[in-house]
Amino acid sequence: MTPDIRYPIGPWDRIAPSDAATRATAIDALAAVPHALRQAVAGLTDAQLDTPYRDGGWSPRQICHHVADSHMNSFIRFKLGLTEDTPTIKPYDENAWAITPDVLGQPVEVSLSIVDGVHARLVALLRVQPADAFDRGLMHPERGPMTLAQLLGLYAWHGAHHIAQITAQRQRNGW
Image: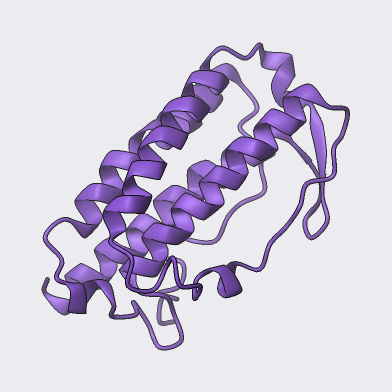
């Protein structure tokens, strides 16, 4: 069976990091995203940044801007989940966002800086939460009820997933 290049690290597993050590590992994974994303796109030309990683897929430029968009939303989702009782979060059309003018042609550094700042705030917030905070819930209109632990697992996977799409593309193309 040919591996699915859409999921170079496999699809997201909805299982939540349930103990302190696993949560700490997931938070560490979030903390690593800014540096790893910068490394993934370092030295790429504009032509390479605009080359989709697969037919019908996003380019590394779009992926960088998507990670910024998505992880800004994740920060807000965590804050809502920590400060409100089972809030309903707002989904968004990722594909529509990936082709807006602020994405196409925009230097990746703009979003890399956003990822730096958002992750600094997000990691600082998550590292100080008591264990029971991760049991708090929210309602995702597309995924259904989720705990903050599941949300943590989702975004730890999400950053690694998109970074792997870029690094796998670099390897396939000899960049």
